[in-house]
Image (cartoon, rainbow, N blue to C red; front, side, top):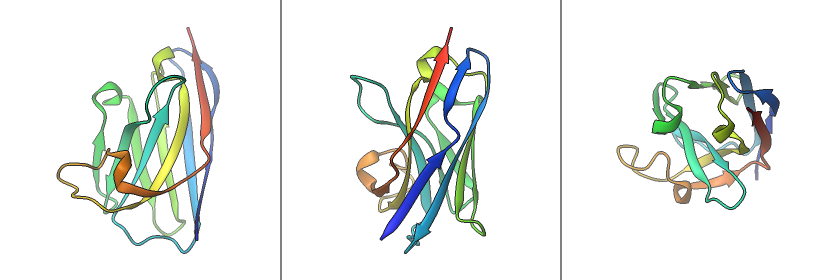
Length: 126
């Protein structure tokens, strides 16, 4: 069993910053990628950022140059630094692990991840 617990969400004004963290415990999967996804009300869950083998990062176009994903394998934690936040970034953010895809093509495909956290809410006001 794998447990993923997100933290760090909250409410900020546009232009502000937040740092999300995801703590992994249990039978931590040995797959090479972990990722952040988000889901706003009435919308599908979308990939935000993923990190492969702790080095290669992939970002959704909407967050490039604003968000940074990082991984600390020693502490089994995944982080997402979010800067210059916009109201459209408001959503529930989820940590994902247990990747089983082709990293060249689908690091941000939610169907390729097996384990999910409960989410942390991010609200950005204008």
